[in-house]
Image (cartoon, rainbow, N blue to C red; front, side, top):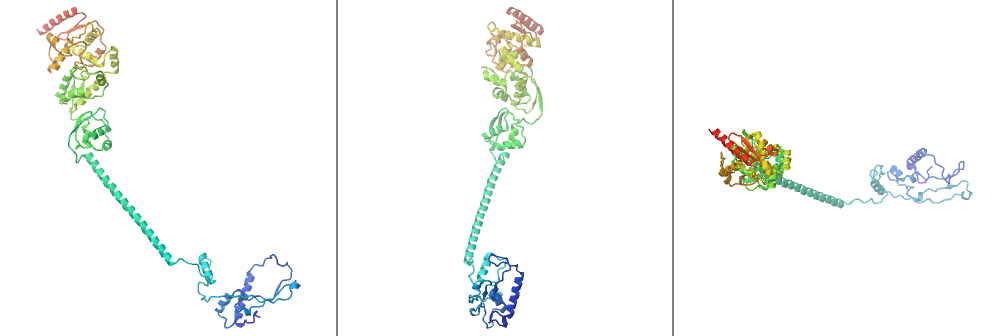
Length: 528
């Protein structure tokens, strides 16, 4: 039977389906667990007189089945007058055994007429976002949906985003333009610098004004660059050094005075301070005992250098040798003809035909440095003489002696006189007067007269002036230098030589006068 008197046959199908649904759900549900307040096992079950209909549990389902229409009949879920009376019987409780009739509470369900196909009626599926599911639930319950951003707000955000994008694009454009301008400026300055450096290296457009400079001994590439820069020849000394390094410059520059010009390229400047390329060589022998003037004339006769340049180099050039430094430290004696007299060592040399005067003189000085060893310096100091004094004695020996044996004896005569200056203050060497006359007249006399010996006024005249002359009168050989340092021990104070080279020695003036007579006879015999 139906639980409500208003239910008719038209609702029978829905009720049966609902009951069937309830049975299946009950069959599939797990058995109920015992909870506090339940009756113990075996107790008499509670008896319910009535159960709610299916419409009370799922009015929406019944409404869907019936299409939302009641066919003119009142629906028990919406009509309070048709609500069933529920009778509750409590077993085992006499106090409450009498049936109590209470009206069922009113159940009012407001439904919104919405088509079944409307998405708002569908239950939220598992994949919905919480906001969307909430909005759908609210719509189903008749509540207003959550507020969404107003279209005007989206437009403002979009406009703001476009403004920021435009600002960023403008900033990036400014950066790009700044970078391009910076690159162009750097390129311009770099190009100008390269052009200027190239002009300095190759001297495309530079002044041709000539400038005199001096390159010192042992000048390095850095020294050369500094000198050229200070004199306005080049503009970039560091570039000059780098260029020389790239060209593998050895740095062996030739000391001397040069005339250069800014119009000369780096290569021409480098080559200007280097020994000239070999254009043929000449072997030249400088005889032992040659004077400085005779050496100069000999070199000029070979076409190597000029006389005035030799004189200037010998007297003024700053050669880097210990003996030159010592000579200048002691002071150049007054009346000396050439500063380097005695130091231009006679030997056989090979010279380039285009050698400069500095190269020639430096080569002679370098040879002297090899000959006058440290032992000679020590021996000179032991005797109480300077190196220049020893060379002066050696030059006298070179001019007065004819043989090796004479070197030893003549050296002893000069040393004996110098050691007994109180008795023999004057050396009385004819060779000194010859040298004085040669320097005064430019010609070497063949012989000297007694009158010339007594009247030639020159500090080199050892007949008039005491002690050694102001400097060597020749450039002595290695033998003369050695005997000047190591004389033979003797008691000779006089010597005289014949025209045939024979030399006679004496210890006293009387003996010396007899020797003079003998020499005159020997010369007369040679003449006849």
